Image (cartoon, rainbow, N blue to C red; front, top):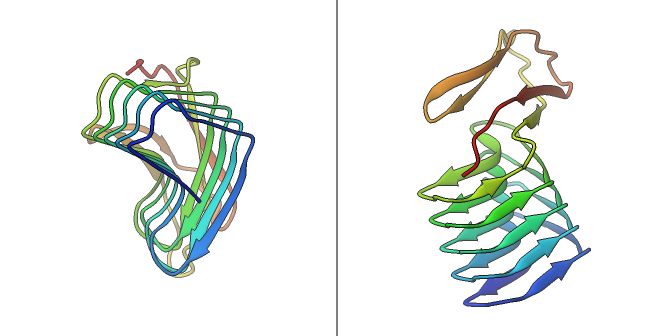
Length: 171
């Protein structure tokens, strides 16, 4: 992948990035870096372990991410974008897919971050593929700040399902 640390005013445009391994994988990792542009990249992270991140921002500020397509897959805790302790970043027009064989997988995971701008349409579509051979899946819910925002009760096991959440606030 691509790793920026303490970097300022860099531009990453139209790259194809593939990672695969047995430990934590990063497609693009931006650590304590500011005012960078990440645009039009295709990122695929996968592995036999947990924690595959397409784009990871950590202690990053004023970065612009647009038009990127990200796929993540592993066992659990796979995130298309992981925004940790990062502020005043803009993520617009990106597509994030996250899947895994168990646990929590998220298109976008945001922790301890503020004043970030996401998708100007204020509508975000989530795609997921459930795979449970032992039980029937009755529903899938999207939780925002610990509250159920939307629930899908027509689940197709082993098929891609989609949910769209409308009316997100900026930030």
